[in-house]
Amino acid sequence: MSKKLSLAVLLSGNGSNFQAIIDSIIKGQLKADIKVVISNNKDAFGLKRAKKT
Image 1 (cartoon, rainbow, N blue to C red):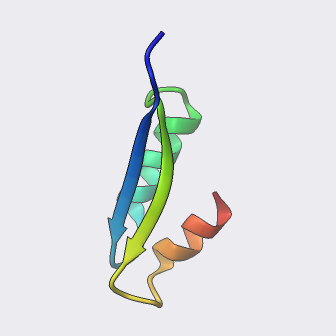
Image 2 (cartoon, rainbow, N blue to C red):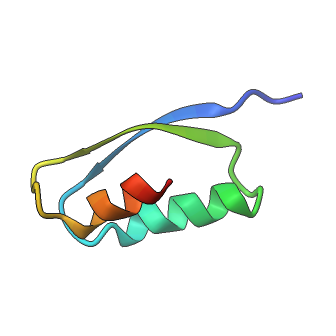
């Protein structure tokens, strides 16, 4: 049994790579938990994605 990775995600814009990580977790392709999302842009759309997860 493999352990889940604990992830921290850094983003500054749309968060399309962040969404790809979320999708991989949902599909079971990546065994991970997103623990924290950090952005240098308070208006980054990626932060809205993070609030949904």
